[in-house]
Length: 207
Image (cartoon, rainbow, N blue to C red; front, side, top):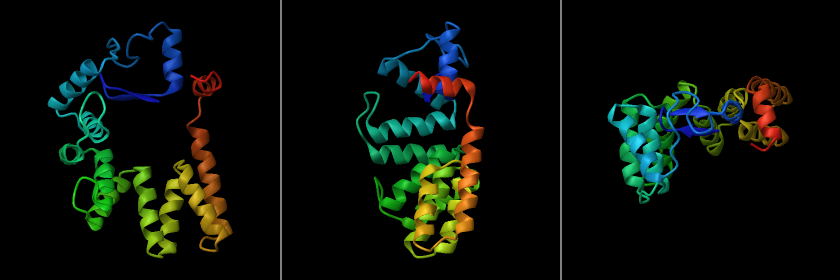
């Protein structure tokens, strides 16, 4: 999957394959904007949406500052500043990114409670990686019961790393056989729901 910055929609491989077959490989399948590959054009499209108050675009721009991509210098403090603005506009992904930064002291002074609060906000709105992180935090402090509760939720939403954690906890006696079986079944159901003939074909073709 990839992000189309013209409209900030994620395009899965199946949709991209279908669009190519309809002769639309030179434009966005959602908004029909002609594709741009050069950094300057892509950055201009992102900034245009940021000026309009697009929370997705703002979080995405922060990520590009964080990684030093699209010709931007790597600037973690600037990324954190942008993510904070994105949170104000309702970006759940920005909550997650700020959680990572504050919990690990990346670009800001370490503040684990603040990082956890950002993950909690994101998790309450269905952000799976944030739920996984909350489980890791509880496991780190030995609160296995609560850790498993978080992991059960994210595993059932199709998060593979979470499922692996529950498996390890089961082997070490920190999760029950029933919990692992329930998580495994929920994970498989979630993965099955995300499948489509187009995505499977794209995967088979290495698209």
